[in-house]
Image (cartoon, rainbow, N blue to C red; front, side, top):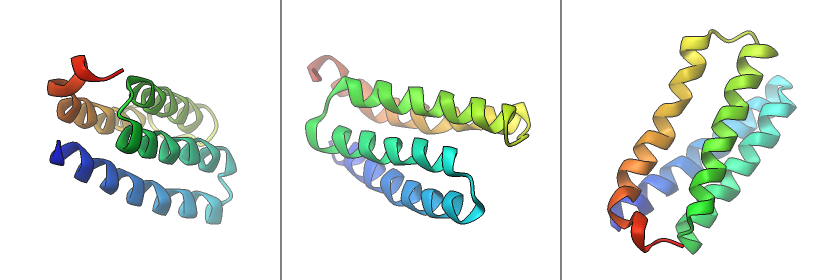
Length: 100
């Protein structure tokens, strides 16, 4: 649908900006995970595969762990990272059974 396409493009653009900021701040671990998020959203946009959504969720979990364990971000703020995949799934839910 149009909604998931627009949402994916927004997420790709924001992830690119986040990757640049993480690189500039020296958070290369987060930048690498961010690069995987970008690839996963591109795959979701182009291939429409469930595995791309699962990859996004895994990357968010890894980011949360890195933020709490290494970058000393509070757990509540780190948990806010789940907002993205929740919104993504809300857009995907009506197409979920059709996806491979």
